[in-house]
Length: 462
Image (tube, rainbow, N blue to C red; front, top):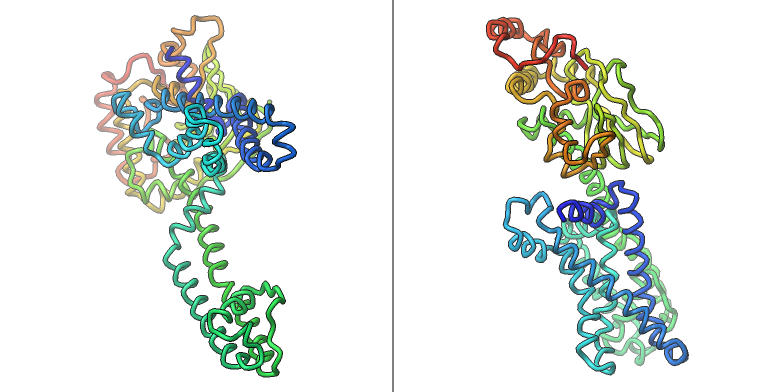
């Protein structure tokens, strides 16, 4: 049952992150949302409703049942979301149900549920709720979410620009009323009548149903048209700038979050993590492309921005997805890869090179010492950084020649498989060899070397 819940969680919540089956599930739901909105419009056509009414009802039944099953499934796996894992299942589901995305899912289900309880004539009043299903697309469109955030963040500036536009409309309407009211009393006899002309002119629509006929009115109309171009640029420019900033912030937040998840960096200050995140370089790989080979020199670590990565560790194959990382200890100096890593789908990677990190740490010795302290603190921990919790959260483990239940134990104990992800406990990392107090600290540790982690050889470097 737990395995099924994790699989369902990946389909529902991580589908767009690179899981092939999850991506198809997302596409199916998007198609159903679009079909549901189209049905609402088509049912209002009398000829289509009379001829295809039964087919429309069947389609609504299928769509409604699917949305209901999706909503219940999301509630079932709600306690697997990282923010809710510490809560009890019931509390986790309640907190999830109060999230905006979950409320939209509930609104999408309500027409189907209420349609069963109400008679068909009453069901027509639910057409607005059925149209609300369109907002489910926001779950699958990061750009739409970014646009919403941009509008919310600049709501005060947008409101101010709308007030300015409204003021100009009123001034233009009043001026045209003064100029044209005697000539065209039906069109400009009152200021409210003139507001219609001012609105169409300021917005540069110009329907042409009401136009000035006096020379003064024409001059005024031309000035209002030119003024309208500049006024409309105010809210458009505000939204465009905020949208671009939101996209940049979202991308930076994603890279910052990926860096912060790395055990080596997770205890650093937010500003330090931001400095490291700026060092990341993009790299695109195709499905089937080998990213690194076992035994080759390792001088960089990788973050998965999108796609699926397969890493062969010992007798197991671990599938990492969006948000995962590998080769952590490679940034500490001379290492060799202990696993062959291959992309199982087209993927976007972010690469952190050890030389770039080294240059940063030379400029910021305090940051270097904090990372060094973390390395030394972890010397008594298991060599592998891929722990059971990380595998359960973001990866699928496919055993090769061993029972599935023993895969995680094998990952934890396979020294060869995880050597590029565990700290070298017998020597000071090369990256920190030029720190002023590095040699003193290394000598202090040499005194207790015999009491270090057992079974670690000096040549087990990755």
